[in-house]
Length: 259
Ligand code: G3P
Ligand code: CA
Image 1: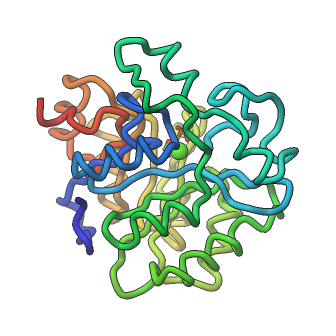
Image 2: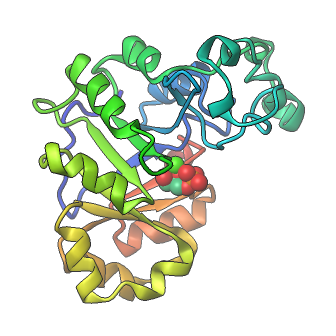
Image 3: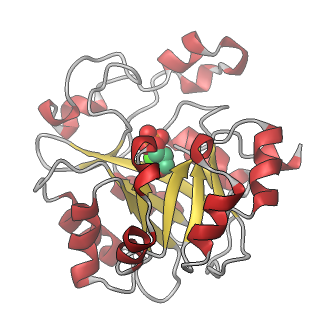
């Protein structure tokens, strides 16, 4: 499993299991997270959505349509209703080569269930896909505190495309490592000034790998900001980006750098 206390330094490289080991198992299911732990990813990545009754669950889209047999917004489902859905069969249909009977009927996990299962054996890289003022940040911080994941071990990173979401967390937990995700169409606006501003609340930035080049990587690292790049599923891209000095990659294929 991942290092208990990953030392963030500018020459350290981490491999982040994007949505779990989501090439080989249905994304955001316990099966995908378990495989990521088994394959010793440095971090497991969890996107957060919230149910109608206010429970944080692991899901990328704001709708359940793509990754379950249901329809509609996650926020229109209670947790009980969401638990009725099958979050695995779509994967078997879409990726027959990776299909497994064990994925049929997989449930959407809550963040709490993930913490209960993996505790501090793994490192968590959590994304708030927050709608403004949803209260997602408070619920996340509550669970991190409840499972003793803040502070001593340093095994949690919070990421978001929303600066507002990150600032909410930074206000009360200034030592929790935050990563500002940058949309591809905003990469050209990354001036020195903007990077300084990001540095005031985050330890690093997350950028789509197609937007990166040697010069930009150097510029960002010169500000003492880490660069974690998404989503790298090709071995040549992986090797090139590592060679260029990124500090980590999000990948669906946890074995990518080892094959
Ligand atoms: O968090 C990095 C990457 O996961 C951002 O893109 O759409 O996969 O959440 P997305
Ligand atoms: Ca994500």
